Amino acid sequence: MAVKIRLARKGRKRTAYYHIVVADSRSPRDGRYIEKIGNYNPRTNPATIELDFDKALGWLQNGALPTETCRAILSYKGVLMKKHLLDGVKKGAFDEAEANRRFESWMKQNEEKIESKKSNLEKSKDDDVSKRLQAEKKVNEARAARLAKKQAELAAKEKAEAAPAEEAPAEAPAADETSAEAASAETAAE
Image (cartoon, rainbow, N blue to C red; front, side, top):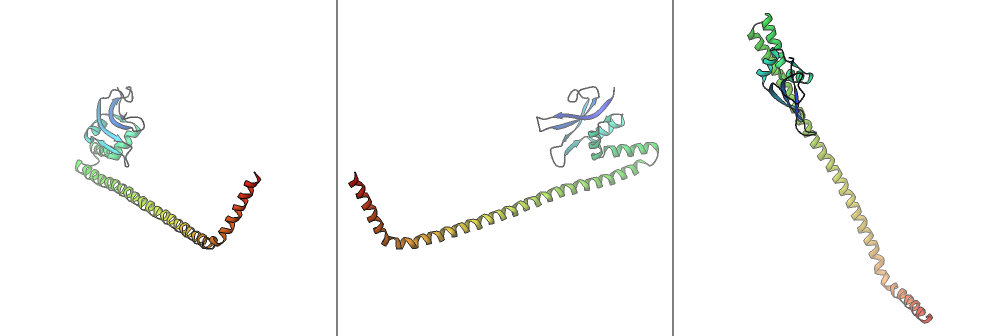
């Protein structure tokens, strides 16, 4: 029986998350498994990985083969590094204290890398928000300038219409007389 460490898909359509499971290689993807050793959510940035380190290491040492994705996850969490160092101890390349020291230094570097990625994501998010605010301010200023220009044009138009309107009442009765004469001519024609 070939045992694999692989992902089992969970969640509804377009919102997938995965269980990291140890299963017989012949069982279906989401089917029966031997043991669940963690969770993986790729929808977050960076991806959320919860893994039982000791169980995963134990299964690897007993001969379980990880799939490509699970190999990347195990490498990210340091399980493969720990297995590699323990294999070095078995071969006599160095002692267990040296293996633990190397693993701790590797984990510190890995954690620093992860923290820098998180801080870069937050910084880029803040930069994006500030850029959007600046763009929105520019748009609002342009709108305010257009509105002020339009209001100035309307005010100038009203002043231009108001000036002839003051002169128009003197001429208006003549226009009214012509229209009255035209109306009386029409009634006479009928």
